View 1 (cartoon, rainbow, N blue to C red):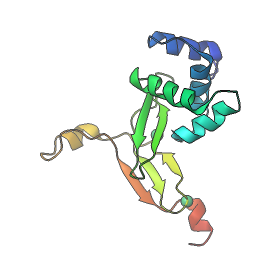
View 2 (cartoon, rainbow, N blue to C red):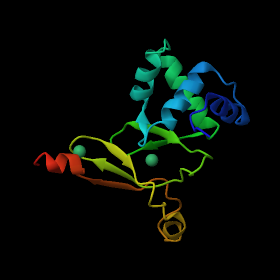
View 3 (spheres, rainbow, N blue to C red):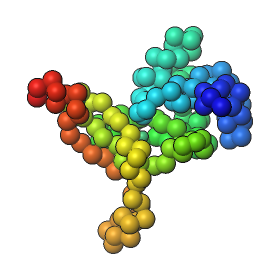
Length: 145
Ligand SMILES: [Zn+2]
Ligand SMILES: [Zn+2]
């Protein structure tokens, strides 16, 4: 079963209690197809090619966040990024992210589950919402920093 099957995306949106509008379906399809969290600008750019304006892109992203299909994350550079929460297979659990301080690329470290329980037991911490690793990505390193 293809994850980007439009009927399945439509169903995901409806199950969350939203109307499955074309803009929402296209947004989810974009998020399904990437391996990193996308910015609002990425989504707006993708949707503008399909005839939707920026405000529509932003509003629909917010709707998808509110109903819990999409997770919003801020990685210290004051840019919101969006990724699927997903009930698909394999599940996209909360995970640390890696931010390259040179090129700004963000990647999902999906293979490392967020060690939430152990961190939440530390006295000073009420709840951990994000784990961020910063450094130089392999691509930038190979380009001779
Ligand atoms: Zn880089
Ligand atoms: Zn991620």
